[in-house]
Length: 550
Ligand code: HAS
Ligand code: CU
Image (tube, rainbow, N blue to C red):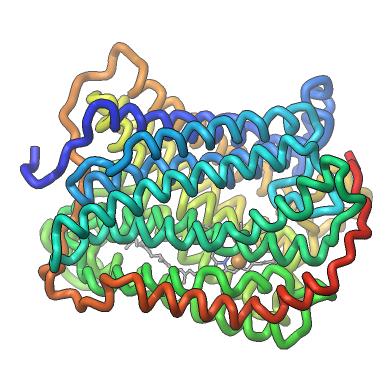
């Protein structure tokens, strides 16, 4: 065991493990609907057979989106970041009870939101756009999940502040700083959805107000909805920068570039939500243009990440004896499922990044918006870059928490490959379908208007989706067997924390200071959102009565 890896106490291991348990549980249920939707697209509609249980395609799609995109991610992230803060700072949480309160608030919220979805009283999809109307318990439940994550975040901030006091003049450890930046960004980002739910959706669902303003609701939603995708992504980046280089046998290429990328995400994640609203009639074109420019800016820290992480991997590959221009790639430990999951995540993210660039262009977006292209894009991002990275993390995290060897590397490797191959087939077909005009969020198998040229791609959606599903089952089986099977052998597992090539103490001080970045972030949000928010709130018209469509 490496002397410089701080060990979590047994209680903290259990606490992190509880997060992972709820995360994987959500993924196991949410993923069940993936193949149902994919097969429906290729003409095999299984929903009628599930009738008493699930009322419609949209109830299934809501469960799929909420459980996978919102619950699997949020629970995994808060658990993983708890570990990152403790191990990174090499100290206990400052107020462990506060973090427990945050976590159980999230669990209460989860149960509260899940019940109306299961009863078909909240089949409003994961974006819950009004005038689609859900039961009030759904909105309150989501609020509690967010509030719980805030509280866990406060726990990280207090712990970080205590560390700073104890270590004056020392550069904060990269992974801990990155975790705190992620959570700080999240606190600002979620103000949009908090305003949406508390001022409109909750009073509306309780019958206190007659209607909502769908335009303002969308603006509030995407204030949170865009940075939400970086709340998912940044924990994966923490692993790519701060852990993967060590697992691959090398070091982090540049501590400064890593910090710089995280600060740029802090600065740029929020003020660009209008790229989801290019077609909204209520947002003037000038604001859409500004948000398009800012969207291209937030491309930059991901390019920095591609450069830095690949440089770190090249360093590792050459340390392992890789020669020549590309020989280092073969010399990476591909047989370690934790490493291969993250390499696949990065490879798929190249393509997800490119389709994001297409989305971000105003005039190209007019062709792609609301087509199958968009789920094609986000399955390469949240369902690949993020999800595969979280799988890779789980392959050492679950053994670390349980003190047992992964059971086993073979099933984990199969899970990665199947997800990777299935995703290539699925996402390519979805992108092509989008270009051919196939709408998203539509049970295409039932549609009477399917042109001949779609059918081969629809079939590929079904095939790719089914292969991915087998991969997901193998992932769940692997971590569940590791945690519970009597056959799992005991093992001492280390948290992989990568050293940087250069001493972090040489990193400039401005990359370790909150104040300038916080001021810049708030100023940019006021510039990019302030006038539009003032205008839309001043002209609010609560006249959409809403209803239940399916
Ligand atoms: Fe997006 C829609 C633009 C990134 C998620 N996005 C969505 C939706 C989701 C989502 C869920 O501008 C749908 C929302 C809905 O339901 O309506 N997105 C972008 C842009 C980026 C981007 C410009 N998106 C993400 C990430 C997501 C995500 C990340 C989740 C985690 N997206 C949009 C736009 C829309 C949109 C519009 C609206 C579309 C519409 O009309 O509705 C960028 O941040 C992407 C930058 C990425 C890169 C790639 C860098 C590559 C790296 C890989 C390194 C490789 C390694 C492996 C390490 C520049 C870092 C090496 C391996 C070896 C073997 C050596
Ligand atoms: Cu976005």
